Length: 131
Image (cartoon, rainbow, N blue to C red; front, side, top):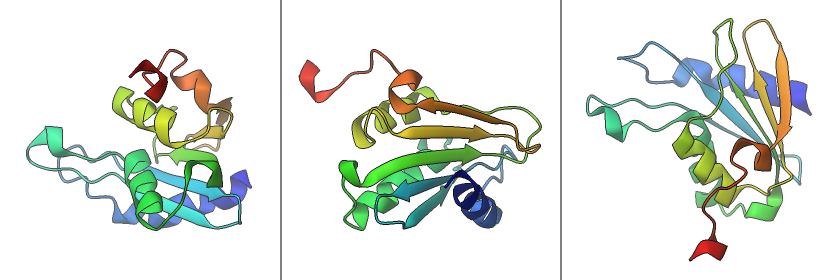
């Protein structure tokens, strides 16, 4: 599964809109039915309006009818030679929209992989239980 996700993410990375940072990021979600949903980062001159690859993939999936329980894994990659982890905003969105035990793969340009569970990224995240 990880290899298919990595290939899908690398295939769409060229669509990242990174006019300002020149730092493309791509994400790929694995769904329980075998489908893969991808996303890339989309920057904006008003930097706060930039959307990360992880959130792009998740919002795209949800807009197509995917439910939390349908998501089994997410992979995040960049063409950099160092590991890149989701930002705080993405971790919070992932905490709500992806199952806690879903696999998270972080992959660098040399195919080094860090594998963890979604819960590990934000162990004390704000959830619906806090409302």
